[in-house]
Length: 236
Image 1 (cartoon, rainbow, N blue to C red):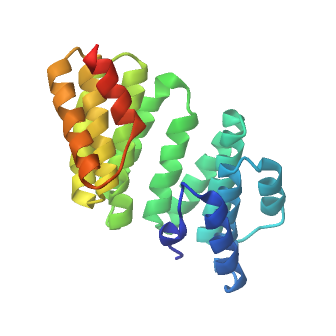
Image 2: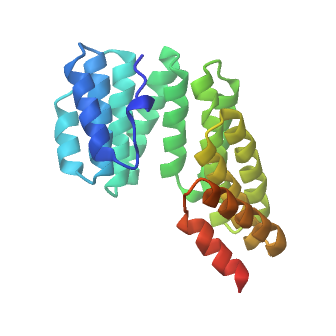
Image 3: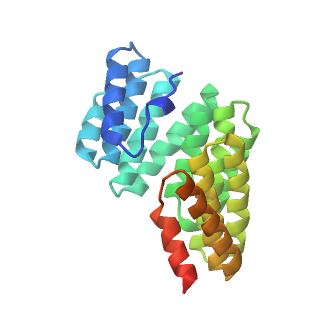
């Protein structure tokens, strides 16, 4: 299996795309196809949807991993380009292919995308189903999907106006982020809790979290406009 994570910089998809092309040029099949699907994903993040589809249309594979990536990334391009309903069958196919091949992390990734394109009244159940698969996985990279899924679950609850349930999900997401150990993602998870607390009218608790985040960012010479925005809102 390939591991594209070290090649990704989601803040710089153009640079990431070059790394994926280099990896593809240095690989034989089916790894070459897998790497090219990540090149496609990087193109999608640059909104080069037509070019991304042209690349995908030239690729095919009977290998389960490559076939999963092909379906998954075609679905992502369709969703990003404004066609979520067309994306759903590709995500379903990716989930089925990955599950049959025992590709746990890709299975959870595909299930999380299914939830994102599903009708609103199905999103909570589908996200919770993906979360159950992640928690039952033996592959740690699949288990670590719980952090993103819990964040998505929190946002789904928040979008529905259920900020109590959102807060509970975001608190679980923070615990998952702390287990994984990435400081930036931990700060984001803390911010989500502060945001939920403000939405619940618990302004003093929210202010304490955002001030702590601001102090931490200052100590490392960094800034976050979202923290500053929350502090401004809480100062009113």
